[in-house]
Image (cartoon, rainbow, N blue to C red; front, side, top):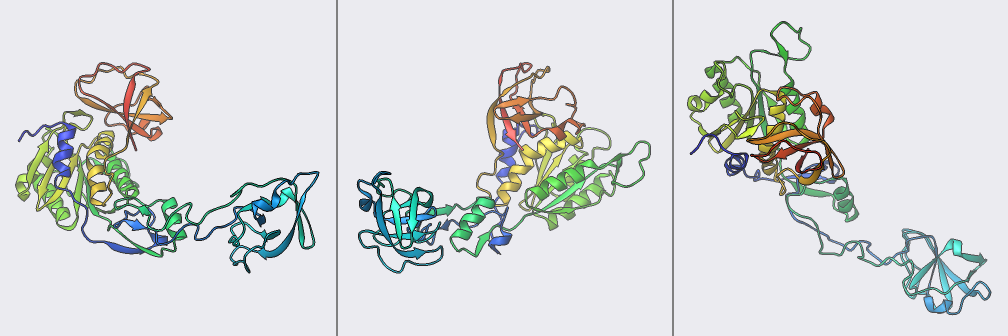
Amino acid sequence: MPLTVSLKEAQERVLGYISALAESEEFSLAKALGRISYDEIIAPINQPPFDRSPLDGFALNHKDTKGASPERPVMLKVAQYIFSGETPSGPLAPGEAARIMTGAMLPAGADCVIRQEETKSDTGKVFISRQMNLHDNYCFEGEDIKKGDVLIERGVQLNFVHIGVLAGQGIEKLKVFPRPRVGLLATGDELLPAGAPLVPGKIYNSNLALLTARLTELGVNVETAPCEGDTPEKLALSVDSLMERCDMVITTGGVSVGEKDCMPKVPGLIGAQLLFHGLSMKPGSPALSLLKKGKIAVCLSGNPFAAAATFEVLARPAIEKMRGRADYMPLRVQATAKNGFSKPSPAQRLIRANIAGKDVFIPEEGHSSGSLGAFAKCNCIVDIPPGSPPLLPGEPVEVILL
């Protein structure tokens, strides 16, 4: 098995060992936002559950308005008043209308509704000055959702619209996939926690904060472990302990070829299988992945943008699949580069960028794999295929949305 692989091969190797967590959790609708639906959810009722008026006005039979005009309005008897939440007192007889409010149930015999503003009324009477058509301003039972329709498929992340639809069906509880527990370890003797005095040769640990925040956005439980030091034995102890307790592990740093890059020795020390070491991609080329007892660890570069970008294309799909999400691969769209990128790309290259509509704007500076500043103003990653010349303005590009 080759150790240096393409991104596609790396994704296949990692995802091949990932499956959704098997058990479900039952949650109230109010707490289900952002969770992944465990079951296909079928509509138990029609929506609306009865024929209703979409506006305030008068419900009537369109035949009773035949020949109506401003010069010769038709007069109808107002036989009943129907407010939202009430039921009609009975059917309308020919020549009768019902004063009706928005959302109220339409009475039998009515096949249209005229706006209140288009009428004139007197005690017990309404005057109609135009001819109505069958089903003018008429909402049918089930015209939005029919009983038996699939409301939400299994593996869908529930958003605010889903919550509203389910609430409108009277659904109080539903089953969702449990949240995976992801272990996170940012390695490097040079790292300091935020708030500590900055001393020469040290840097603050941005990777731990960045990936903790991103994992939290993705709806997983994050367990971080302190870095005990850049030795193979200490890293092996930390990684092994996290893999015992968590569903998946992500690390940053120590994956390259330097004297203190100890992560490549960890698989052998903990009895894990090395799935790959090295991606034919920039940034993030030193990344590796290991497997132990059916669990995956993805070990990323310590350079902040390299870690962030590689996380999006390699670790994020695995996490989304583990969450139970059916569309677990990042969304890709086609767009046009409004400005260029001067370097050729012998290997696949990921570039931070900002997309607006179908146009992509690439920062002029700040493309180092160790820099995060320019990435803070971006909302996507441009995926440049291997063997590409410098990117020119106006060229089509494939974009990974964040």
